[in-house]
Length: 243
Image (cartoon, rainbow, N blue to C red; front, side, top):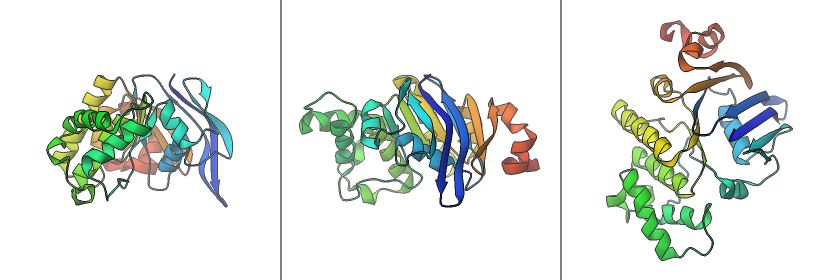
C-alpha cells in the first residue's frame, strides 16, 4: 500500500470540506477521485500533498506517518502533483521549469544545472514539448501548459502522482492524447496515480478503481462500472442520462 488516509477531516470554519474519509492507493494503481463541484476532491489532494493539515485523522506514505510532514519533504519522499489551474513559473522558459524540479525533487544531492537541463529534455520529449524548450512558459496554450506541469511533476521522480483535473479545458482530441500519455507514463515509471477528474469517459477508461465524494463524504468506491451503476452516485453526480 503506497498511500493510506485514515478517517481524515478538514474544516474551514463551519464548513466540513473532508468528512472522515478513508482512502487507499496500491502500488502501480490508478485511482479515480470524482464527485460534484465542492465535494472536497481538491481539498483531499491538498491534504495528501501537505498544503493543508487535517483537523483529524492520519495520512501514510509507504506506511510512514506523513500527517505533519511539510510539502517539500513529501516531494522528496516521492509525492508530486499537477493543479486544476497550471502553476508554472511563467517568467522562466519551458526547460528551466523542468530543470528546477530535477534539482529540488527526489534526487541525488549536488546535481548541477547542466545535468538538470540535459535530463529535462527527456521529460519534455515525453510530453511533446522538446521543440518548445526555450519558449517562455507563459506563452504556451492551455494543453501545453498542462503537459509542462506533468513533465515537471515527473521530473521530481515521484512514486505517487496526484493529478487534479488535467483534462479541464481540453478538447476531445487533446483529452484522448492526454489519457494515452498518462497510461504510458504509469507503465513506464511504475507510478501510482490518484486522479481527480470530471471527464467521465476519461476516468472510466483509465482508472482501475474509483472513489466518489459528495459534501466531503465518501459515498461509493469500486470498479468503474460498479460505481457508474451505484444509485447514490447517479443521484449525487452522474445523473440518469449518464447511467
